Image (cartoon, rainbow, N blue to C red; front, top):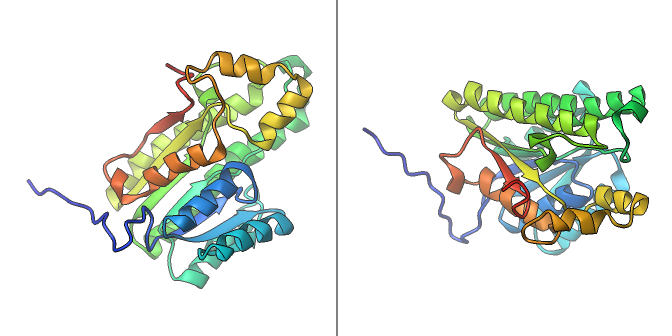
Length: 264
């Protein structure tokens, strides 16, 4: 039996040294935190989102700290748009090694019968179809350039259970788990690992909007979280970085809760 020892050491000790990375939804929240962290850990990072001013701000912050980053404006719900973003990354850097599919949206809390069809379609197109389209483009790029690599999708702890007030959101995130597991099976033999992180309460713009609707919601969420607090976006980014690194070389098909114990 041959034992494979991946080369996860480098001169700097950085987790993602020499990796070419792509991050969707990278202009704010978990995506922006991931972009900064991945660059700090040695990756060359391409940020993808729809708002140029926000992308430019994050890239400027990264480069000011000595990191390597650029951006592409794209809409993950549009196949040609995300394909072009991935291709641009390859053209700029020669290959694609890793990707973090973080882009997603949420609407306000609402009982299912009060949801509007257009909101369901929007959630479906970005949070489910957008991940599917992104993975297709990324897998093709990894196989044709680096030859092997890793992908992490951003799911939610809400994907594991019912979601009162967030029916369409929770269903789309559960679909992401299925895509993650299927891709891990299909492309593991080709050298691509596919995992997901499932954040619990995380201090992003989405949570801030919920708090504006219901000022007591953060206290309620923290009360059912064993660590009794919300996560900082960087804490979710740390989990994604590890899954994308060679240190997780035998981990694939996993949906990792990053939830302060909420699912325990």
